[in-house]
Image 1 (spheres, one colour):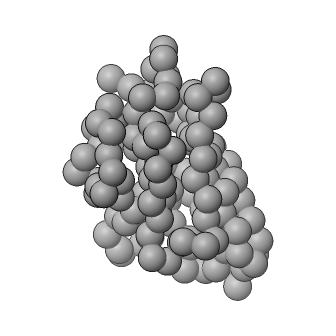
Image 2 (cartoon, rainbow, N blue to C red):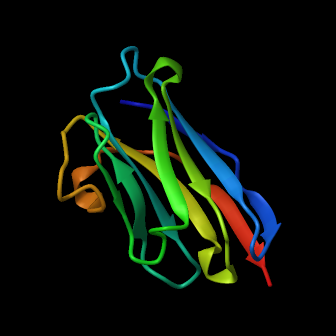
Length: 125
């Protein structure tokens, strides 16, 4: 089983930025599809951003243009740069991984087999 550890969450005012990191425990990182999901209070989990091994990316409707996902295979790490944050972005953010090379399904959580514990992001107005 792959261990994923998220970090970088915290509290920020509206308009601010945060960068989340997710470190994978796999010995050879690079072939996985990775994604960030989030769950806000009393809402279903939703896909935020995804990236596959070919660096194809996908973004949710509410995050495209503000969030950027990237990966550094030499560090076993996926990042989520979040800019222009709003209170609606308040949620627990989860990192997810799968060995599949996803294309159109990058933001579909059923494809992902490994999940991190989550990191809290709180945005105040």
